[in-house]
Image 1 (cartoon, rainbow, N blue to C red):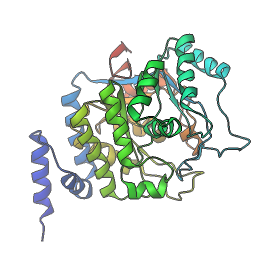
Image 2 (image 1 turned 45 degrees about the horizontal axis):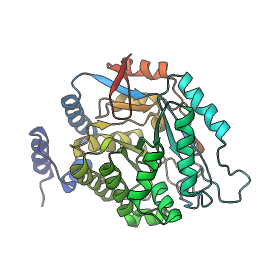
Image 3 (image 1 turned 120 degrees about the vertical axis):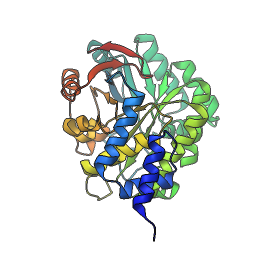
Image 4 (image 1 turned 90 degrees about the vertical axis):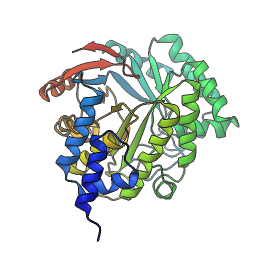
Amino acid sequence: MINHDKEIKNILDKIHNERRITKEEALILYQKADLLTLGALANCIRQKLHPENFVTYIVDRNINYTNICNSKCRFCAFYKEEGSKDGYVISKEELSQKIEGTIQLGGIQILLQGGLNPKLNLEYYENLLHYIKFHHKIHIHGFSPPEIIHMCRQSGLSIFKVLKRLIAAGLDSMPGGGAEILVDSVREKVSPGKCNSEKWLEVMEIAHQTGLKTTATMMFGHLEFLENRLEHLDKIRQLQDRTKGFTAFIPWPFQPKNTQIKKQTTSGFEYLKVLALSRIFLDNIINIQASWVTQGAKIAQIALTFGANDLGSTMIEENVVAAAGVSFRLPESELIRIIKDAGFQAGRRTMDYALLKKR
């Protein structure tokens, strides 16, 4: 019979000695260690990586340029099918209004993402970027790997050529959306129309090779098993070993309302365990982001002592999670307040985590 107590002690010793743990050891930790042990471990690592006691955030806006999507992900409550009366492609006038409103609120970045719209070709995306850069001084954090693969299919070009054209048109960095769980048996159930895990990772690796910085995400709490979450983390860690291109990791729980997947909402308890384990396992990614958008302010504050050092965006606008029935909203002043009430200093940052302003 396996002595799990001894196993856990050996794993804890490895972590305290700053040695990398395996995904098998991480699974044992998740299953056998209590929440406070995981939290304390993650907090210890966070303090070593970020001894300055800052919690960072960015002022930006999510702009969804289209909600028409042929991927038909079962977890998504936002998309509309082609021909739907509620489908849209954003106009340049509305786009400019959103960007100007963002700048007026102190925003320095837009997160530009949309559905896999079969009517949009590569030239559309290039023109969109050119238009934004010509009319506005703002950082464009845009286009997740599934969108890039969609552009490749539409244009017949390679990932590298598509990315080079987007960079030339004004793309500054890339979000880590569309990862869900990087295990194809899971992806086939929840997002069969999206690129597979290999393609997601390939887009990110090539993006890093071109000089683009990106984030990485994990959406959990739907149809995956615990082992799948660890396989996802392991694939992210292996890629980061090769490229050092991820600036942050963002784990967030699936929101089931208005979707085709009928599951209970992930508890705050489980969210904190996954967050802490992410901080412990991803020893080569400096920043871990808490998801206040899905968890609310109170859990977000606790997350800051469970490994997270960043609260992400002020989310001047957010549509995808809101479509699943979750609508937490925090103005910048409130974000600063909850950071300070949790015992930290607040700092406004850029996408690559350069500190802009202490608050």
